[in-house]
Image 1 (spheres, rainbow, N blue to C red):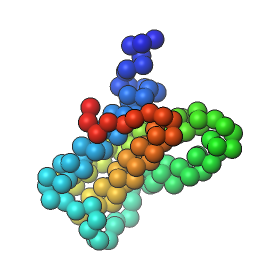
Image 2: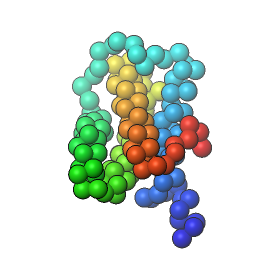
Image 3: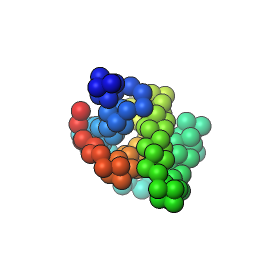
Image 4: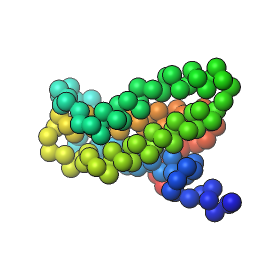
Length: 134
């Protein structure tokens, strides 16, 4: 279904691409606010939502290895979709730029940064570009 292939909801490439563009937007706004991702503040103890995202990020190397061993790019496709879903839930529930506690904000910025890098790398492995803006 051609209409389904461009849907921003559900298990589609545009949904994942939009998630990446959303992350890049966070960093453009962070830069405009003068926030420094590389600032060496201590990080807070993660909330459950943050821990869920950390677990997803941690799985990436194993997912790539499994996909290679099984000659199955679908493993990466399913993972990156699940990661985008997890990030969007995190983004909905956990303010990033509006978080006043700098330790929590920096942790969330780091999580968004790592998620964006993994989405970009995953999509590259699948031969799909990710736009900076949508």
